[in-house]
Image (cartoon, rainbow over all chains, first blue to last red; front, top):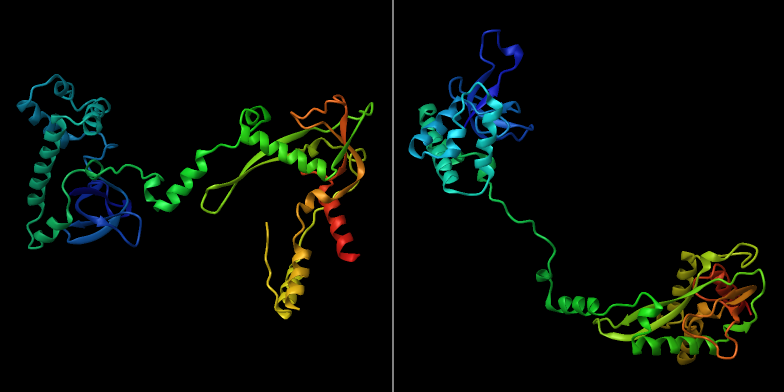
Length: 287
Length: 72
């Protein structure tokens, strides 16, 4: 592929051309840029300031224009006539070219691609007369890099990548839904019995006594929370309903005086473990 | 001998629903749980004696209980 590489201001005088034609070899390792070879000066250089006629952001040049016109002679179509507009208005010319390059795949596109290939191959022969020809042929890929790229669909997380056991576990877990409100749970018998169970436990634990409401003191609310307790294989162990007080409604000095967050000290655990070891007993954690 | 120790340790660690056993020092009144109306006292509220999940002082009450248990 032939590239136009920008020549630095310091290296040229007023009348020298601003770019030189080089052969695209690859990408530079030691810098961000292209790696190009100039057959005339036999110079290898890396540069970022490079363009090619087929770059989509580059206005269509004579080179492309000629190609399109040649094609028009073979296939006379309305579309093609549009792009026949003269070079004097480069902005207008860009769009039909881009449209066909990226748009729906049609026969036109195919012909353009093959055309471009031929064109570039001609170019190659024009440029390379050295014995290193084979080497270049291997590295060079014909056509525009952008359009020849194979587009792979974005890989998303799918269930296919899981082992059957995990798959079963996950489907098991998302199969059942925990109700979010009392109204929702009250429709289901198993949640009803779970709530009964919890109420029974609370009453047995003597958690509260029923009193007349004190005037001026707002009772705090409470809420049911529903949770499915599972075994390690994902099967359901039990349905658990739990009452949670809305502590956020409590006011300091009225509903509570002091709070405390228990924090475990690592030394405490070490003492416990050391104790267990010294007495040769087993520690079992239950949660 | 071993067995006895095991039993002791087990007692130390496993307290069922320890969190709900904490006793409250303050007077906290709470609405009755949704769906459970006392037939005799429909307009009464619950005066909490023991801690519940979500209460501000619940961890403190639990800690108090634990210290009590460990020290005494």
